[in-house]
Length: 176
Image (tube, rainbow, N blue to C red; front, top):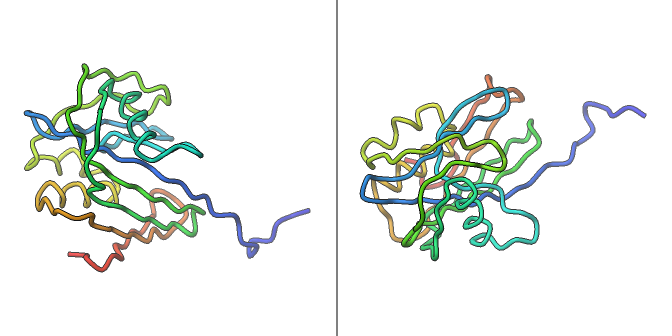
């Protein structure tokens, strides 16, 4: 039995926890090696497992990716919603600020994505993020620049079916 191209395919939904970890040397960003060898930078974090509480999963991901242990979180600082209908996925990212992170930085990601990390001063945080998707770059840079008090929401529509040809439109009402 063949599937018609007009037959709607199931949409994959997932939630990611994002960590804004700041220290004396700035904000921590990690370098990721994605499928196909693409490299980008992002705040630490990752996909929350089914049945896992968001903050619990975020804490697990941060420890797995960076070796740091975060005893408490503030926020959420911002939330991101992405819809990529042609790619068949929807993404929700919730970013929290780390309170009193401890431990030593180490990069031994069991998923094999995070290669290393570095601290970047807030005013330079946009530099490593230049090749990152706008839904990663814009919310973090805007938060580090404006430091709002309440959770801010960002929305993106991602059109296209190939990474090289994607068109990303910011659709949130707070768009600047």
